Length: 385
Image (cartoon, rainbow, N blue to C red):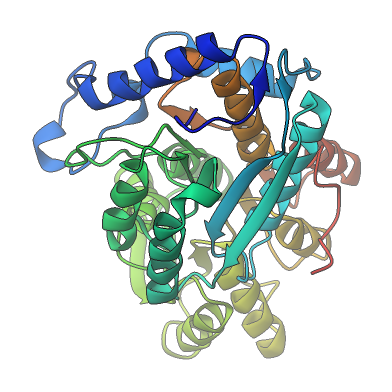
């Protein structure tokens, strides 16, 4: 918790003392907790290197069970700033906003939110927002930052994390950068590397070896290296797949559409297209339907958002690594509660949500059950935005 008074009644002194001690522990913490092969080639730590045993599992358990009310009382609502690309096609941001706020409601924690929305490619706008929030630090108790790209926004993340007037959480990344002098209080994400292995294993089992494929990649950086690069390495090494074209669509619907049109025209031998996010997957499906190729090309999405599941039901998208999407927002609410109660030291530095593969060979009931679990706070079906 931050050092300015929030009007917590009861054990205020204990809560503030615990929070200040935790803030110091983050600065002084000796990372990594353990070394792993390849450390010298990475600019970031892996989750298993920074989480103490049992802490991730404990937060996952708290997130998945019925809410236990906040044990204290607040005289005024928490002020929460959210800086994220929620104006983009993907409903990940909107859903986790709903999960965050509905879980806070269940926990009995009053709050007010201020949103600073951008699109995924609007890096400069995000930087402007981060500077504005940092300058107005006295207005906020918690800041949630969903970076447009980790490397691009690294300075802004570190700037926010270093501000002692509020607690900073990062959404949609799980790779704490090594050079940070002070880490954010926690990172909340789904492991793209784990998702890449899940969809790789599924596709190798279903499609076999010696497949020719193409890729709609995102923006060069950690996320795309894992979602696209790890998938490519996996299918090439384990299945002898051959990639004929890699298009950088910048995580935009238009990028997926243009890349897929080029693949259809110039690389007709590619019968699999891997898309690195929802927006590009939707653009890719649109291009395939327009060309009458949606039945000939095996297409993947990323994330299992409502838009992707609807496309699977229509027979336009074939598979996607599906996140239990509301876990990030709900876990953040649980982290805020723990912080307010002076239990911040119990939290993992990196929280990871669950991932499974949703695909077109599932029954409608199976997809429905996955969706209900994934979107237990934000609701089933594509969001109206």
